Image 1 (tube, rainbow, N blue to C red):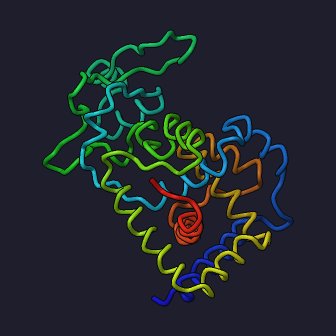
Image 2: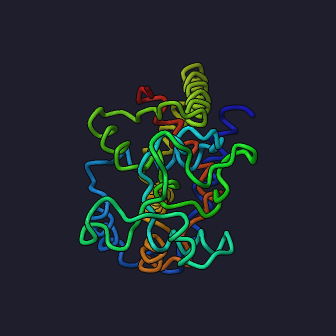
Length: 264
């Protein structure tokens, strides 16, 4: 596809998001933004939104690296219920078979527990024959957020002032190669680059809505679906925008960032 046509597709995807806004516009916008700022400090922008876009665009290859290297995998009671249903187990049996007490005190983590997993061992749900995770569709929230929207990655991005690469992650390497190629195409086509820059610097309502929805998707990935749905309802939205609805515009956003920020 021609680069200019690709940007036109991204523009249409941006405009399509406006259809999710209720008649009369969004509600409680400022109070929802304030709550978002309390949930994730504005100091992490634009890295929070950039990593949310990267998360939507990358496709986990289930290589198993993080399933082995992450020594402490926390699970909430909601995670436990969801995975237990998926496996056809009672909550009690699931917790006895697959979890252990959290390393931190209950007053700090509530009902959260840890998956039973020794250092250097694979997660109990990793199966190389599948390949990958047996509970991928219902995996723990911390696994869903890893690595782009993990607390550690966000802190590194803010400290280094860059969208940091994810070590040993083939999905991240593949995505960054695509973005690097996109940036090269932009460099070779000043008119298309100007068109893309104009699209996101216009300050138009479709851009404002997209950035709000992208941050909302980040909240969904970081905190879970329930928290994001609560924010969406307060905005007057019928639902949180789907991943597919965000990807095309997210690709344009990430491509614009790739042209301006060094991805390491």
